[in-house]
Image (cartoon, rainbow, N blue to C red; front, side, top):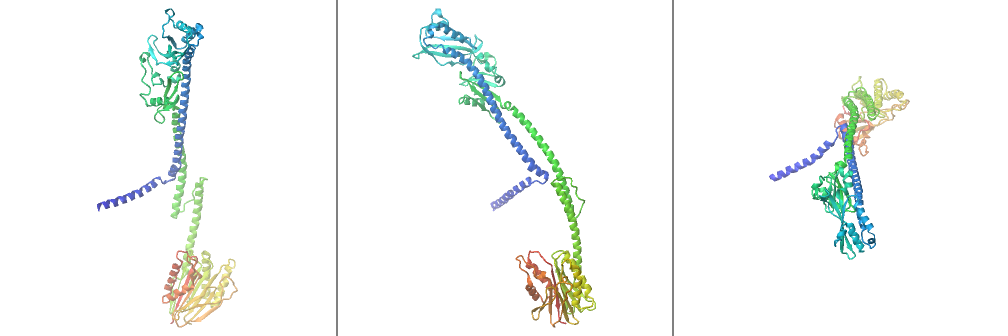
Length: 630
């Protein structure tokens, strides 16, 4: 059981953590102000773009500078190596002329000239010639011995010259290096040996006086890695033994030595980015030696490092300057937006302040102008709404507020407008001369809204003023129509009207139908529906029209009379189906035992259920009269 609890707790905790992290991240990266949005979506991408471009440019220029340094260093090494190769080539070329060909034996002067010319070359200390047989004591000099040997007419070849390691000569107080070659006859037997002794320091003076040698760490090494010369060489007497072998103490030296075995020239990078050190090497042609130069990466990349520092300062300065201008611009925009926001909040609370000043011609200025325009129009609309509310209140006060009830007669009605004011109209008219007489009116003005409400009020006033004057119902309606047509002849407005009058003293019901739907009559006892019909047109159409009045005796049984506007049975649901008069009749039959107020509420509820979510498109007005036998 405890394990289950732990698993459930862990599972819930895991879900909480999984759901918590995205919401926290979303909250962190979601900007809450215009300045934060500017920072997040403008400054940060700009900074990242500039940083990426600077890093890419730095790497690109760094590689160019390193390659240029390598090409320059190798070119310097090549030029110095060529000078050394030319110095070494001269004694070799001269001594190659000493190879026996059978003809030189006749001219010892040429032989002596070649030897003398060899000894006079730059850096040559001595020329030694050794033979297997000792020369005549009289001819002990190398020249005379060689001359006598050459005179024998023997033919021989000279091997390729070998170069010895530098060694210290105490007599000369200098390091020397020897060019050694053996002489072989036509049978390949060694018959002699030639050695040219050179002053090593004089021989490589072009190297050690070169600018690149003095300004960098440089080496002259042989194929075995022995250091023949280096920029760290001090007193000559302390270098009778070779320097520590190249590549035994440093990683870059080992990498350079490995590269020298594969190529005659090249460049090697040390560790780091940029590399801590860079080396370049070039191999001599006439000697198995290689010149190596090493330089710190910072020294090579000093221009770009300086440029990077300046670039970073420039970028930082530009970003700060951009940030200042953006902050200043956004601060101004934010201030104006805050001012609009504060005015909007005041407006939402019903406080109309003075118009906001328009100080710019940009979108914010346009927004301010639109806000001022909206405020003016909203103020006008609020004033109009207040006027409409007053009109609605006046119109509602014109409608009866309570049912009419007297002996054997109960009358009630209801109006539901689709707008603030409506054009439907019902009224219950009490006659002061007799409480046994009551008039019921239902009217429907064309359209709805303020205009219809005004026309309805006019008709109500005309009818109420005329109904209390002498005359029959048709005469009353004729006079009201004549007066109304004077107001509607230019507008084309009209109103349908049904006026019904009950006189309990005479036990009669009379009515005039002015273009309105007939009244529905239901007898609960016999369960029979009938209608109060009659000829007549809408009021306000033809001033010459003569209306017709109708009259019936009230039967000695209970009856229900319903007068309604067309907005009752023309209500539609979302499928476009109309409510219809049959439903009204069914509700009237089902609720015939109720008072008119309950009957009206039942009809209104059924209409609301029928139309559902569809909006009301027309005014709904109903009047129900319940007649009971006395």
